[in-house]
Amino acid sequence: MSGLKFRRLDSIGAEVSGADWTQPIADDVARDLYAAWLEHGVLVFPRAGLDADVHLRLSRVFGELEEHPVKALHVKGRKDLIFFGGDETKGPGKMVDGEKLAGYLYAHQDMAYTPNLCKGSMLRMVIMPDRGGDTLFWDTARAWRDLPAATRERLRGLHSIHRMNVIPPRNPWGMPGHTVEALETEAELIARRGYAADIPLIRHPMTITHPESGLVSLLLSPNSYVVIEGMAQAESDAFFDELTTHLFQPQYGYRHCWSLNDIVLWDNRRTVHMATGYPHEQTRLAYRTTLKGAMACGEYYKPADRKVAATT
Image (cartoon, rainbow, N blue to C red):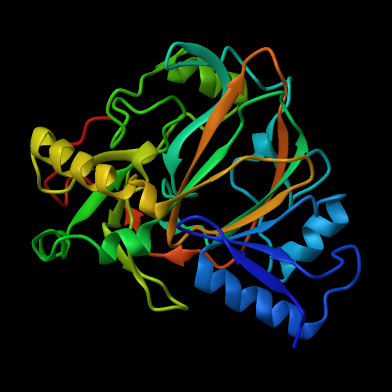
């Protein structure tokens, strides 16, 4: 027995204790960690991330690491770490429910704007703001399980079109009353961050089967959603909003209120997550590793081959 302890969190995830993460990780500990990750979807290591060595050691328990395709996010001199936050790349921020925030990113699944859905990611908190900066997670597997049978049947065989959205989506899907206003245009942000200007459309199935656990889950990634293939935009938007409203219910979610040096790992194949943002005048900095072994479930979308009312 590894001696690890796992405390369940709200509706998804578990907090991990019972090991010294500054030391090499034994095989039995690694096995228990991996099994718990597949079971819980999210693992929280409170105040464990004392340095990059711990972060990388823990990350490699769950697989090899890969280079993130957005090179503007790479930590200087590293290909295995990217950063979120800091003052140099903050930009003008966004108006979220009437408050100017930095670091806000609407609900999404990592890399859903590519054909391959990221296996998972591990985030470590390096600098904390005085308030805000929480991360929300939702369990897309449990949400799928609890859908009415008629809705599950309707989803069978459906595909949605996605696109990397560097500014907030045109509608806060599933969150009525929530308002977000970009304070710079997409072109301005692309130029400032050095993103590729030619952003492709991607076609994904709306339900996927986890390649390791066998769980069926929703693939929604609201931040990158464009339209459901074969539907008129209004019909597509109404159905997508119905699905996200279902997903964002409290019984499927967990809100992580960060402490300095916390590490959080999520299984991107069965979760959606969201960065809530923090006061624009403050600073928040986190480092992230990305697990190699992405799930190949999508494809580049070729409009000439299929009917879609795509609006980008």
